[in-house]
Length: 494
Image (cartoon, rainbow, N blue to C red; front, side, top):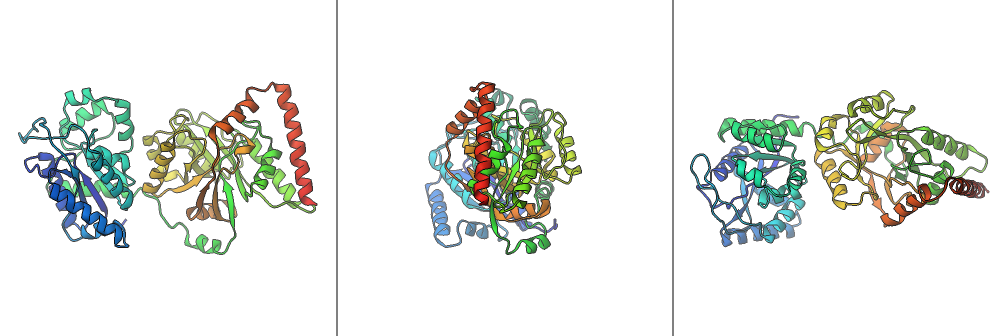
Protein backbone atom coordinates (compact mmCIF):
# COMPACT_ATOMS: atom_id res chain seq x y z
CA UNK A 1 0.00 0.00 0.00
CA UNK A 2 1.35 3.40 -0.96
CA UNK A 3 2.42 5.48 2.00
CA UNK A 4 0.60 8.49 0.63
CA UNK A 5 -2.80 6.80 0.27
CA UNK A 6 -5.62 8.98 1.56
CA UNK A 7 -8.44 7.53 3.63
CA UNK A 8 -12.00 8.66 4.20
CA UNK A 9 -12.59 8.64 7.96
CA UNK A 10 -15.49 9.49 10.25
CA UNK A 11 -14.72 10.20 13.92
CA UNK A 12 -17.79 9.90 16.14
CA UNK A 13 -18.05 11.41 19.60
CA UNK A 14 -20.86 10.71 22.08
CA UNK A 15 -20.78 14.26 23.48
CA UNK A 16 -22.32 17.50 22.23
CA UNK A 17 -19.74 19.26 20.06
CA UNK A 18 -20.27 22.59 21.84
CA UNK A 19 -18.81 21.15 25.06
CA UNK A 20 -15.48 22.90 24.60
CA UNK A 21 -14.33 21.90 28.09
CA UNK A 22 -14.84 18.22 27.25
CA UNK A 23 -11.48 16.41 27.14
CA UNK A 24 -12.76 13.74 24.77
CA UNK A 25 -14.04 16.29 22.26
CA UNK A 26 -10.74 18.16 22.46
CA UNK A 27 -8.96 14.87 21.72
CA UNK A 28 -11.20 14.19 18.71
CA UNK A 29 -10.75 17.74 17.44
CA UNK A 30 -6.96 17.49 17.56
CA UNK A 31 -6.84 14.04 15.95
CA UNK A 32 -9.24 15.05 13.17
CA UNK A 33 -7.26 18.21 12.42
CA UNK A 34 -3.96 16.30 12.36
CA UNK A 35 -5.33 13.63 10.01
CA UNK A 36 -6.78 16.32 7.74
CA UNK A 37 -3.39 18.03 7.52
CA UNK A 38 -1.95 14.71 6.38
CA UNK A 39 -4.36 14.67 3.42
CA UNK A 40 -7.10 12.37 4.70
CA UNK A 41 -10.77 13.25 4.29
CA UNK A 42 -12.13 13.49 7.82
CA UNK A 43 -15.69 13.94 9.05
CA UNK A 44 -16.60 14.48 12.67
CA UNK A 45 -20.07 13.22 13.57
CA UNK A 46 -21.32 14.67 16.82
CA UNK A 47 -24.59 15.50 18.55
CA UNK A 48 -25.15 19.18 19.19
CA UNK A 49 -26.93 21.57 21.52
CA UNK A 50 -27.30 24.06 18.68
CA UNK A 51 -30.48 23.98 16.63
CA UNK A 52 -28.77 26.20 14.02
CA UNK A 53 -25.81 23.83 13.65
CA UNK A 54 -28.12 20.83 13.30
CA UNK A 55 -30.20 22.68 10.71
CA UNK A 56 -27.11 23.61 8.70
CA UNK A 57 -26.02 19.96 8.65
CA UNK A 58 -29.43 18.80 7.47
CA UNK A 59 -29.39 21.37 4.65
CA UNK A 60 -25.92 20.21 3.60
CA UNK A 61 -27.05 16.58 3.58
CA UNK A 62 -30.14 17.43 1.49
CA UNK A 63 -28.07 19.47 -0.95
CA UNK A 64 -25.56 16.63 -1.37
CA UNK A 65 -28.35 14.11 -1.89
CA UNK A 66 -30.03 16.09 -4.70
CA UNK A 67 -26.79 17.21 -6.35
CA UNK A 68 -26.43 14.01 -8.36
CA UNK A 69 -23.18 13.06 -6.67
CA UNK A 70 -24.85 11.73 -3.53
CA UNK A 71 -23.48 12.11 -0.04
CA UNK A 72 -19.96 11.66 -1.38
CA UNK A 73 -19.96 15.40 -1.95
CA UNK A 74 -19.64 15.84 1.81
CA UNK A 75 -16.34 14.00 1.70
CA UNK A 76 -15.10 16.35 -1.01
CA UNK A 77 -15.77 19.21 1.40
CA UNK A 78 -13.66 17.42 3.99
CA UNK A 79 -10.68 17.04 1.67
CA UNK A 80 -9.21 20.53 1.96
CA UNK A 81 -7.00 20.19 5.04
CA UNK A 82 -9.83 20.75 7.53
CA UNK A 83 -12.24 18.20 9.03
CA UNK A 84 -15.93 18.71 8.33
CA UNK A 85 -18.10 18.66 11.47
CA UNK A 86 -21.62 17.32 10.99
CA UNK A 87 -24.13 17.88 13.78
CA UNK A 88 -26.16 14.68 13.65
CA UNK A 89 -28.98 15.83 15.92
CA UNK A 90 -29.97 18.02 18.81
CA UNK A 91 -29.50 16.74 22.35
CA UNK A 92 -29.95 17.96 25.91
CA UNK A 93 -27.01 17.08 28.14
CA UNK A 94 -27.11 15.90 31.72
CA UNK A 95 -24.25 16.04 34.17
CA UNK A 96 -21.59 13.36 33.98
CA UNK A 97 -18.42 12.40 35.78
CA UNK A 98 -15.30 14.50 35.63
CA UNK A 99 -12.37 13.24 33.59
CA UNK A 100 -8.94 12.73 35.13
CA UNK A 101 -7.83 16.20 34.05
CA UNK A 102 -10.82 17.74 35.82
CA UNK A 103 -12.80 18.73 32.73
CA UNK A 104 -16.49 17.98 33.04
CA UNK A 105 -17.76 15.25 30.77
CA UNK A 106 -21.40 15.15 29.81
CA UNK A 107 -23.60 12.63 28.07
CA UNK A 108 -27.23 12.25 27.17
CA UNK A 109 -29.82 10.17 29.03
CA UNK A 110 -31.01 8.53 25.82
CA UNK A 111 -30.20 8.87 22.14
CA UNK A 112 -32.87 10.86 20.30
CA UNK A 113 -34.41 9.08 17.33
CA UNK A 114 -33.33 11.78 14.87
CA UNK A 115 -29.67 11.32 15.88
CA UNK A 116 -29.80 7.58 15.19
CA UNK A 117 -31.60 8.10 11.88
CA UNK A 118 -29.15 10.75 10.70
CA UNK A 119 -26.19 8.54 11.55
CA UNK A 120 -27.77 5.62 9.71
CA UNK A 121 -28.44 7.80 6.66
CA UNK A 122 -24.89 9.15 6.59
CA UNK A 123 -23.11 5.84 7.12
CA UNK A 124 -25.35 4.07 4.59
CA UNK A 125 -24.78 6.75 1.95
CA UNK A 126 -21.08 7.48 2.42
CA UNK A 127 -18.22 5.30 1.21
CA UNK A 128 -15.81 5.39 4.12
CA UNK A 129 -12.61 3.53 4.82
CA UNK A 130 -12.93 3.89 8.61
CA UNK A 131 -15.51 4.71 11.23
CA UNK A 132 -13.67 5.63 14.43
CA UNK A 133 -15.96 5.66 17.46
CA UNK A 134 -15.07 7.11 20.83
CA UNK A 135 -16.49 5.53 24.01
CA UNK A 136 -19.07 3.49 22.03
CA UNK A 137 -21.27 2.63 25.00
CA UNK A 138 -25.05 2.72 24.55
CA UNK A 139 -26.97 4.90 24.32
CA UNK A 140 -24.76 7.26 22.31
CA UNK A 141 -24.01 8.54 18.83
CA UNK A 142 -20.81 6.47 18.87
CA UNK A 143 -22.71 3.27 19.62
CA UNK A 144 -25.26 4.05 16.88
CA UNK A 145 -22.39 4.59 14.43
CA UNK A 146 -20.91 1.21 15.29
CA UNK A 147 -24.32 -0.35 14.71
CA UNK A 148 -24.72 1.17 11.22
CA UNK A 149 -21.11 1.27 10.01
CA UNK A 150 -20.18 -0.45 6.77
CA UNK A 151 -16.51 0.47 7.06
CA UNK A 152 -13.55 -0.78 9.06
CA UNK A 153 -14.28 0.03 12.69
CA UNK A 154 -11.84 1.47 15.22
CA UNK A 155 -12.79 2.34 18.80
CA UNK A 156 -10.99 4.53 21.32
CA UNK A 157 -11.66 4.03 25.02
CA UNK A 158 -10.71 7.02 27.12
CA UNK A 159 -11.71 7.00 30.78
CA UNK A 160 -14.40 4.35 31.40
CA UNK A 161 -15.01 3.84 35.10
CA UNK A 162 -15.18 0.48 36.85
CA UNK A 163 -18.59 1.41 38.19
CA UNK A 164 -19.90 2.28 34.73
CA UNK A 165 -18.63 -0.99 33.20
CA UNK A 166 -20.11 -3.07 36.00
CA UNK A 167 -23.44 -1.30 35.59
CA UNK A 168 -23.72 -1.94 31.87
CA UNK A 169 -26.98 -3.68 31.09
CA UNK A 170 -27.22 -6.47 28.48
CA UNK A 171 -23.51 -7.23 28.43
CA UNK A 172 -23.97 -9.81 25.70
CA UNK A 173 -25.52 -7.08 23.56
CA UNK A 174 -22.52 -4.82 24.21
CA UNK A 175 -20.10 -7.64 23.44
CA UNK A 176 -21.90 -8.33 20.16
CA UNK A 177 -21.38 -4.76 18.98
CA UNK A 178 -17.80 -4.68 20.25
CA UNK A 179 -17.33 -7.80 18.13
CA UNK A 180 -17.60 -5.53 15.08
CA UNK A 181 -14.42 -3.69 16.06
CA UNK A 182 -11.38 -4.25 13.88
CA UNK A 183 -9.04 -2.39 16.24
CA UNK A 184 -9.32 -1.20 19.84
CA UNK A 185 -7.35 1.75 21.18
CA UNK A 186 -6.97 2.92 24.76
CA UNK A 187 -5.74 6.42 25.52
CA UNK A 188 -4.06 5.29 28.75
CA UNK A 189 -2.64 2.15 30.32
CA UNK A 190 -5.34 2.40 32.98
CA UNK A 191 -8.12 2.43 30.37
CA UNK A 192 -6.55 -0.53 28.55
CA UNK A 193 -6.29 -2.57 31.77
CA UNK A 194 -9.87 -1.76 32.77
CA UNK A 195 -11.38 -2.55 29.38
CA UNK A 196 -9.39 -5.76 29.04
CA UNK A 197 -10.66 -6.88 32.44
CA UNK A 198 -14.30 -6.53 31.43
CA UNK A 199 -14.13 -6.99 27.64
CA UNK A 200 -11.00 -9.08 26.96
CA UNK A 201 -9.25 -8.31 23.69
CA UNK A 202 -6.15 -6.60 22.36
CA UNK A 203 -5.99 -2.87 23.19
CA UNK A 204 -3.31 -0.67 21.69
CA UNK A 205 -2.32 2.25 23.90
CA UNK A 206 -2.01 5.62 22.11
CA UNK A 207 -1.67 8.37 24.68
CA UNK A 208 -2.23 12.06 23.99
CA UNK A 209 -3.45 13.63 20.78
CA UNK A 210 -0.36 15.40 19.42
CA UNK A 211 1.46 14.71 16.19
CA UNK A 212 2.91 11.49 17.59
CA UNK A 213 -0.56 10.19 18.42
CA UNK A 214 -1.83 11.18 14.96
CA UNK A 215 1.06 9.32 13.37
CA UNK A 216 0.36 6.25 15.53
CA UNK A 217 -3.31 6.31 14.62
CA UNK A 218 -2.49 6.63 10.95
CA UNK A 219 -0.30 3.55 11.35
CA UNK A 220 -3.26 1.63 12.80
CA UNK A 221 -5.39 2.66 9.83
CA UNK A 222 -2.73 1.56 7.36
CA UNK A 223 -2.30 -1.82 9.04
CA UNK A 224 -6.03 -2.48 8.82
CA UNK A 225 -6.32 -1.23 5.24
CA UNK A 226 -3.47 -3.51 4.19
CA UNK A 227 -5.60 -6.51 5.18
CA UNK A 228 -8.28 -5.68 2.62
CA UNK A 229 -8.36 -7.96 -0.39
CA UNK A 230 -7.47 -6.85 -3.89
CA UNK A 231 -10.55 -5.60 -5.72
CA UNK A 232 -9.77 -6.47 -9.32
CA UNK A 233 -8.14 -9.89 -9.17
CA UNK A 234 -6.34 -11.28 -12.21
CA UNK A 235 -6.57 -9.02 -15.32
CA UNK A 236 -5.72 -11.93 -17.65
CA UNK A 237 -8.57 -14.05 -16.26
CA UNK A 238 -10.86 -11.05 -16.40
CA UNK A 239 -10.17 -10.71 -20.12
CA UNK A 240 -10.62 -14.46 -20.68
CA UNK A 241 -14.09 -14.34 -19.12
CA UNK A 242 -15.27 -11.44 -21.26
CA UNK A 243 -18.06 -12.59 -23.53
CA UNK A 244 -18.72 -15.85 -21.70
CA UNK A 245 -22.39 -16.69 -21.21
CA UNK A 246 -24.04 -15.98 -17.89
CA UNK A 247 -25.09 -18.98 -15.81
CA UNK A 248 -26.90 -19.32 -12.47
CA UNK A 249 -24.96 -21.01 -9.69
CA UNK A 250 -25.93 -22.29 -6.22
CA UNK A 251 -22.87 -22.64 -3.97
CA UNK A 252 -24.20 -24.51 -0.93
CA UNK A 253 -26.33 -27.68 -0.82
CA UNK A 254 -26.49 -31.18 0.57
CA UNK A 255 -27.30 -34.73 -0.54
CA UNK A 256 -28.24 -37.85 1.40
CA UNK A 257 -24.52 -38.35 1.99
CA UNK A 258 -24.97 -35.70 4.70
CA UNK A 259 -26.33 -37.01 8.01
CA UNK A 260 -29.15 -34.44 8.01
CA UNK A 261 -30.37 -34.67 4.42
CA UNK A 262 -32.39 -37.24 2.42
CA UNK A 263 -31.97 -35.83 -1.12
CA UNK A 264 -30.50 -38.44 -3.48
CA UNK A 265 -27.81 -37.30 -5.89
CA UNK A 266 -30.05 -38.13 -8.86
CA UNK A 267 -32.86 -35.96 -7.48
CA UNK A 268 -30.45 -33.12 -6.72
CA UNK A 269 -29.16 -33.01 -10.31
CA UNK A 270 -32.63 -33.25 -11.84
CA UNK A 271 -33.92 -30.48 -9.54
CA UNK A 272 -30.95 -28.25 -10.35
CA UNK A 273 -31.67 -28.54 -14.09
CA UNK A 274 -35.39 -27.92 -13.56
CA UNK A 275 -34.55 -24.71 -11.75
CA UNK A 276 -32.26 -23.51 -14.54
CA UNK A 277 -28.97 -23.80 -12.69
CA UNK A 278 -25.81 -24.05 -14.77
CA UNK A 279 -23.49 -25.04 -11.90
CA UNK A 280 -23.84 -26.24 -8.32
CA UNK A 281 -21.47 -26.81 -5.42
CA UNK A 282 -22.28 -29.97 -3.48
CA UNK A 283 -21.07 -29.38 0.08
CA UNK A 284 -22.09 -32.28 2.32
CA UNK A 285 -21.22 -32.19 6.01
CA UNK A 286 -17.80 -33.75 6.63
CA UNK A 287 -18.18 -35.90 3.53
CA UNK A 288 -17.15 -35.70 -0.10
CA UNK A 289 -18.65 -38.90 -1.53
CA UNK A 290 -21.96 -37.26 -2.49
CA UNK A 291 -20.19 -34.48 -4.38
CA UNK A 292 -17.96 -36.95 -6.23
CA UNK A 293 -20.99 -39.07 -7.16
CA UNK A 294 -22.85 -35.97 -8.38
CA UNK A 295 -19.90 -34.83 -10.50
CA UNK A 296 -19.54 -38.30 -12.05
CA UNK A 297 -23.24 -38.69 -12.82
CA UNK A 298 -23.49 -35.16 -14.26
CA UNK A 299 -20.56 -35.88 -16.57
CA UNK A 300 -22.14 -39.17 -17.70
CA UNK A 301 -25.47 -37.50 -18.38
CA UNK A 302 -23.86 -34.66 -20.34
CA UNK A 303 -21.78 -37.07 -22.44
CA UNK A 304 -24.59 -39.55 -23.14
CA UNK A 305 -26.57 -39.91 -26.35
CA UNK A 306 -29.00 -36.99 -26.75
CA UNK A 307 -27.39 -35.50 -23.68
CA UNK A 308 -29.29 -33.35 -21.20
CA UNK A 309 -28.29 -29.75 -20.58
CA UNK A 310 -24.78 -29.67 -19.11
CA UNK A 311 -24.51 -29.01 -15.38
CA UNK A 312 -21.20 -28.24 -13.71
CA UNK A 313 -20.70 -29.81 -10.30
CA UNK A 314 -18.13 -28.26 -7.97
CA UNK A 315 -16.90 -30.86 -5.50
CA UNK A 316 -17.04 -29.38 -2.02
CA UNK A 317 -17.26 -30.24 1.65
CA UNK A 318 -18.60 -28.35 4.67
CA UNK A 319 -16.06 -29.25 7.33
CA UNK A 320 -16.65 -28.95 11.08
CA UNK A 321 -13.48 -27.68 12.74
CA UNK A 322 -12.44 -28.54 16.29
CA UNK A 323 -13.85 -25.43 17.95
CA UNK A 324 -14.00 -22.61 15.39
CA UNK A 325 -17.11 -23.41 13.40
CA UNK A 326 -17.51 -24.67 9.85
CA UNK A 327 -15.68 -23.86 6.65
CA UNK A 328 -16.37 -25.02 3.10
CA UNK A 329 -13.70 -26.23 0.72
CA UNK A 330 -14.54 -25.93 -2.99
CA UNK A 331 -12.84 -27.76 -5.88
CA UNK A 332 -11.67 -30.60 -3.66
CA UNK A 333 -10.50 -34.08 -4.60
CA UNK A 334 -10.22 -35.73 -1.17
CA UNK A 335 -12.27 -35.80 2.01
CA UNK A 336 -11.02 -33.55 4.80
CA UNK A 337 -11.51 -35.01 8.30
CA UNK A 338 -13.58 -33.08 10.81
CA UNK A 339 -12.04 -31.92 14.07
CA UNK A 340 -8.97 -30.14 12.75
CA UNK A 341 -8.34 -26.55 13.76
CA UNK A 342 -9.59 -23.83 11.43
CA UNK A 343 -6.04 -23.12 10.28
CA UNK A 344 -5.35 -26.83 9.68
CA UNK A 345 -8.59 -27.24 7.71
CA UNK A 346 -7.74 -24.27 5.52
CA UNK A 347 -4.23 -25.63 4.96
CA UNK A 348 -5.72 -28.94 3.77
CA UNK A 349 -8.06 -27.13 1.38
CA UNK A 350 -5.06 -25.25 0.00
CA UNK A 351 -3.03 -28.47 -0.33
CA UNK A 352 -5.71 -29.81 -2.67
CA UNK A 353 -5.72 -26.63 -4.73
CA UNK A 354 -9.17 -25.73 -3.46
CA UNK A 355 -10.86 -22.49 -2.47
CA UNK A 356 -11.78 -21.44 1.07
CA UNK A 357 -15.43 -20.41 1.38
CA UNK A 358 -16.90 -19.38 4.75
CA UNK A 359 -20.62 -20.26 5.13
CA UNK A 360 -23.13 -18.34 7.28
CA UNK A 361 -20.22 -16.67 9.12
CA UNK A 362 -22.18 -14.65 11.68
CA UNK A 363 -25.22 -16.88 12.22
CA UNK A 364 -25.03 -17.47 15.95
CA UNK A 365 -27.57 -20.29 15.60
CA UNK A 366 -24.99 -22.26 13.59
CA UNK A 367 -21.49 -23.32 14.51
CA UNK A 368 -19.47 -20.43 13.09
CA UNK A 369 -16.05 -18.86 13.50
CA UNK A 370 -16.25 -15.82 15.75
CA UNK A 371 -15.14 -12.42 14.48
CA UNK A 372 -11.60 -12.63 15.85
CA UNK A 373 -11.03 -16.17 14.51
CA UNK A 374 -12.15 -14.98 11.10
CA UNK A 375 -9.77 -12.04 11.25
CA UNK A 376 -6.98 -14.47 12.09
CA UNK A 377 -7.39 -16.32 8.78
CA UNK A 378 -8.61 -13.41 6.67
CA UNK A 379 -5.70 -13.61 4.24
CA UNK A 380 -6.61 -17.23 3.45
CA UNK A 381 -10.33 -16.72 2.88
CA UNK A 382 -11.32 -16.62 -0.81
CA UNK A 383 -15.03 -15.87 -0.44
CA UNK A 384 -17.72 -15.38 2.21
CA UNK A 385 -21.35 -16.42 2.06
CA UNK A 386 -23.29 -13.16 2.48
CA UNK A 387 -26.76 -14.59 1.91
CA UNK A 388 -28.15 -17.89 3.14
CA UNK A 389 -31.97 -18.29 3.15
CA UNK A 390 -31.80 -20.78 6.01
CA UNK A 391 -30.39 -18.11 8.32
CA UNK A 392 -33.38 -17.31 10.50
CA UNK A 393 -32.32 -13.80 11.58
CA UNK A 394 -31.76 -11.40 8.69
CA UNK A 395 -29.23 -9.29 10.59
CA UNK A 396 -26.78 -12.23 10.54
CA UNK A 397 -26.74 -12.17 6.73
CA UNK A 398 -26.37 -8.38 6.84
CA UNK A 399 -23.40 -8.71 9.19
CA UNK A 400 -21.73 -11.09 6.73
CA UNK A 401 -22.31 -8.65 3.88
CA UNK A 402 -20.80 -5.79 5.87
CA UNK A 403 -17.74 -7.85 6.73
CA UNK A 404 -17.22 -8.81 3.09
CA UNK A 405 -17.64 -5.21 1.93
CA UNK A 406 -15.24 -3.63 4.36
CA UNK A 407 -12.47 -6.19 3.83
CA UNK A 408 -13.31 -6.44 0.11
CA UNK A 409 -13.70 -10.20 0.32
CA UNK A 410 -15.53 -11.78 -2.62
CA UNK A 411 -19.20 -12.37 -1.81
CA UNK A 412 -20.95 -15.69 -2.41
CA UNK A 413 -24.38 -17.13 -1.69
CA UNK A 414 -26.14 -20.48 -1.63
CA UNK A 415 -29.42 -22.09 -0.72
CA UNK A 416 -27.89 -24.42 1.90
CA UNK A 417 -30.61 -26.73 0.64
CA UNK A 418 -31.31 -29.90 2.61
CA UNK A 419 -34.43 -30.64 0.54
CA UNK A 420 -34.76 -30.46 -3.24
CA UNK A 421 -37.55 -27.88 -2.97
CA UNK A 422 -35.13 -25.30 -1.55
CA UNK A 423 -32.56 -25.63 -4.32
CA UNK A 424 -31.82 -22.40 -6.18
CA UNK A 425 -33.79 -20.20 -3.78
CA UNK A 426 -30.74 -17.95 -3.95
CA UNK A 427 -28.40 -18.06 -6.91
CA UNK A 428 -25.39 -16.26 -8.28
CA UNK A 429 -25.50 -15.00 -11.85
CA UNK A 430 -21.94 -15.13 -13.13
CA UNK A 431 -19.83 -15.78 -16.22
CA UNK A 432 -19.29 -19.43 -17.12
CA UNK A 433 -15.97 -20.71 -15.83
CA UNK A 434 -13.50 -23.56 -15.91
CA UNK A 435 -11.59 -24.40 -12.75
CA UNK A 436 -11.08 -22.53 -9.47
CA UNK A 437 -9.16 -19.58 -10.91
CA UNK A 438 -11.79 -18.60 -13.44
CA UNK A 439 -14.55 -19.34 -10.93
CA UNK A 440 -13.10 -16.94 -8.35
CA UNK A 441 -12.53 -14.22 -10.93
CA UNK A 442 -16.06 -14.60 -12.28
CA UNK A 443 -17.47 -14.47 -8.75
CA UNK A 444 -15.94 -10.99 -8.27
CA UNK A 445 -18.47 -9.43 -10.64
CA UNK A 446 -21.38 -11.77 -9.98
CA UNK A 447 -24.93 -10.76 -9.12
CA UNK A 448 -26.71 -12.40 -6.19
CA UNK A 449 -30.34 -13.12 -7.04
CA UNK A 450 -32.77 -14.10 -4.30
CA UNK A 451 -36.16 -15.71 -4.76
CA UNK A 452 -38.92 -15.72 -2.15
CA UNK A 453 -39.04 -18.94 -0.17
CA UNK A 454 -40.55 -20.06 3.11
CA UNK A 455 -37.99 -21.06 5.70
CA UNK A 456 -40.72 -22.75 7.74
CA UNK A 457 -41.79 -24.78 4.69
CA UNK A 458 -38.33 -26.09 3.79
CA UNK A 459 -37.44 -26.75 7.43
CA UNK A 460 -40.69 -28.70 7.85
CA UNK A 461 -39.89 -30.75 4.74
CA UNK A 462 -36.42 -31.46 6.07
CA UNK A 463 -37.89 -32.67 9.38
CA UNK A 464 -40.45 -34.88 7.62
CA UNK A 465 -37.85 -36.41 5.30
CA UNK A 466 -35.16 -37.04 7.92
CA UNK A 467 -36.73 -37.52 11.35
CA UNK A 468 -40.48 -37.96 11.13
CA UNK A 469 -40.44 -40.76 8.54
CA UNK A 470 -39.48 -44.36 9.48
CA UNK A 471 -36.37 -45.76 7.82
CA UNK A 472 -38.27 -48.25 5.65
CA UNK A 473 -40.57 -45.52 4.36
CA UNK A 474 -37.56 -43.29 3.64
CA UNK A 475 -35.97 -46.05 1.56
CA UNK A 476 -39.16 -46.57 -0.45
CA UNK A 477 -39.56 -42.82 -0.96
CA UNK A 478 -35.96 -42.54 -2.07
CA UNK A 479 -36.40 -45.26 -4.70
CA UNK A 480 -39.50 -43.54 -6.12
CA UNK A 481 -37.81 -40.15 -6.26
CA UNK A 482 -34.70 -41.54 -7.97
CA UNK A 483 -36.86 -43.36 -10.52
CA UNK A 484 -38.77 -40.16 -11.32
CA UNK A 485 -35.54 -38.14 -11.56
CA UNK A 486 -33.90 -40.59 -13.92
CA UNK A 487 -37.07 -40.89 -15.93
CA UNK A 488 -37.14 -37.14 -16.29
CA UNK A 489 -33.54 -37.17 -17.49
CA UNK A 490 -34.37 -39.78 -20.13
CA UNK A 491 -37.37 -37.77 -21.31
CA UNK A 492 -35.19 -34.69 -21.54
CA UNK A 493 -32.80 -36.56 -23.85
CA UNK A 494 -35.53 -37.55 -26.30
